[in-house]
Image (cartoon, rainbow, N blue to C red):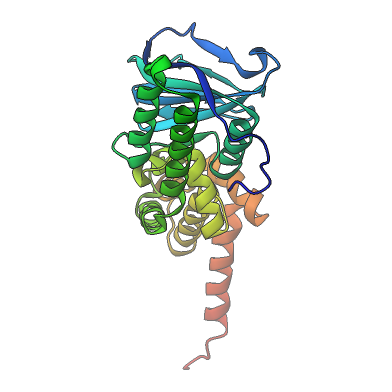
Length: 285
């Protein structure tokens, strides 16, 4: 994890807050407007939910998750417009080349929104760090640096070592998709059921299954639709509803994009095959 990092291994944490409560949509910070000096923002949701735009998508930061921003970068974090309860979080700013390099490695490995359960060893280590920096002059910069590094190592260990827990979560997600693909499932909902952030779940799913969760759901639905088209005379709208598509139009567009043909051709092929079988059956007369 730390090969190639040659900077002085000192974390400084000059700015922090154990708990902050936000409920206004005016709360928004842009990572590219925080100055030119690189530093790390780690913000950990204690209750409620926040939002982070990582430059390509809007991500949710629910309870038990934290986000990482390494300033300056094209990210922004905010209180969601649809928020119904306060976003309660703790935050720290880490300074130093070593800290920035380390958290960039974290981002590259786990994404910008990462699980940090409140009852985990990593969370306990983070709380010890917050207690140290809260003590002010009662703690030396070396104590703070060592505790910060201990927190990062523990967090890394929890995210990478318990492979069985991650695999169990993934197996559950696959079974969940197979059993409920006919419903209007969203990837975030499946990730929540598996106990992972959407970003981390999508990355892990693609590594193991070799396709994204969205593609996996789509293919399950197409397989079901193809089966219904071949084996029943149900109207196209009914086939779409029973196989998890929003409408007949949605089914037609997806079918055409993936298979290169209209769904009606699938039904026509079945009829043609049945006609051919009947015409080729020897007469008993």
